[in-house]
Amino acid sequence: MMTLHDKAVLFGSLHKSGEPLVLANAWDVASARLVEEAGARAVATTSAGVAWSLGAPDGDLLGRDQALGLVARVAAAVDVPVTADIESGFGEKPEDVADTVRGVLEAGAVGVNIEDTVRDGAPSLRPVEEQAARLAAARAAADAMGIPLYINARVDVYGHPAEDPQTRLRAALDRAAAYLAAGASGIFVPFVTDPATVEALVQGVDAPLNILVGPGAPAVGELAALGVARVSTGSSIAAAAYAVVRRTARELYGTGTYEALSGELAFGELNALMHGRG
Image (tube, rainbow, N blue to C red; front, side, top):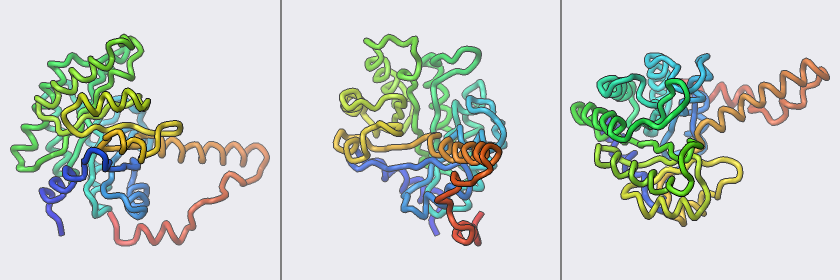
């Protein structure tokens, strides 16, 4: 049985340019087990999916204890390494981020996503120096526990319309460099999938690059050819699952039929998947 340290080392080794770690993000034990069964080398949680499943909106509004409780259940339910999306760290100060990281490791996960968006009023980008301090606190907390935590530092430059399109690439690369210097392991740049920009990011970031994908994005093989080291689906699988709920409910209360349920997983198959798991 692998130790937490072993899982952390393994998880870090899975990030290879041109051979991306592919993550179908999960939000509960059942989704995590299904992802693992499909052949995933690791399981990643989605902050939005987790928040929705626990009755909260995404965006630093879910309580830390609730989030960590879910991470612990997922980590106990799968054999592969688990990485947790902890939004911006569940706290205003770097010490709060450190506390969250300690909780993540105690829950059994070996990686985190930490974003640089501030949602105090209108969303904005956190000043680089402040975000670097938060990442440094996360790294110090993990080091003190003797675990090589994989810190996936999210750079949200492309998600903010106020950012100048002419300077976004340079801004993203500058933030990436500062975050790596502060102790990040890799860089996550969501909201961009066009091959030219992805390739420029790969060339300009001195660490594994994570790209967020969904319908319309280049296939995994294309991203691999560009040098991407990690590909993740984020909240889209959870959102698609909830879309089935809405379609089914509207059909049931509308026409009184049930065709939206076609293709559901067999009860026995799901039930068997849960036997003996967290």
